[in-house]
Image (cartoon, rainbow, N blue to C red):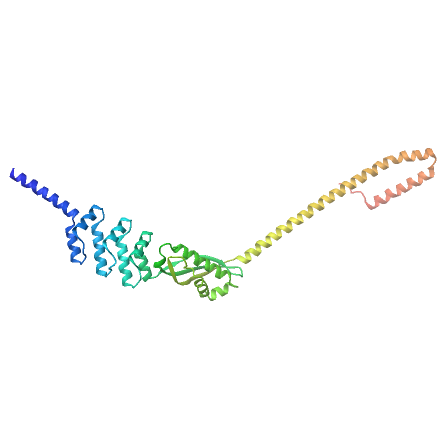
Length: 324
């Protein structure tokens, strides 16, 4: 019975100690005190109640204290954590900025972090500039030759414009637009190939990093290839279009000529029909002339002779085709 009681007391004591050390991180408080960070056990206990990881806050305070960052305090770190920020990255960024003599305050760092940007990476990019490469940029010089260029843009993070500043996609789009404008204003593609640095100089003068989260340090043309002869292709297309137009007009004239010919044939047939109709009336007219005494027998024979002579001449001029 006594043994059972001792075991129960021991288990209860262990549970009580476990609960105590969970809500009152005594060893974490000792670590903070040894590192020179002044924080009370009550504050650590209240962090547990507020569901704030005390270990994260204490480690951040120790790092900031060792780096000489006096503007970092517990309340601000807790507030940033509760707002959904990354306390560790913010402190890392502040320490890196301090060592690199970059003007970065705690409020600015937390604002950048809450804006969704990696503030620690931004500080690193301020120290070590990043090189981003544009996709293939296609442009056409004034002589009609297509050029395909690739540029490497060296950028450095602009800490002051990280909040609300445009990203890498905007920088690449502006650089691509500048390359197209520069090549398009060149008289010949040979000028571009001989002096590709002129593109870089022209693009840099445009201030393409305005309103972005970066500062453009340099733009280097990595490669330029010759593409299609767009001018010649356009001339060929224009010539083909002119040819099609000319053919259409010729077809229209041919159709009009055929229609006119058919109309003339119709008129000729109509005239021939009238002649045949008039010839059909000729015997009746001659008979009436004989009756009236206006036509004699000799006149009739003369007319028949003339008709026979006319038929003979027509047969001589147009002999009949030989029978097959």
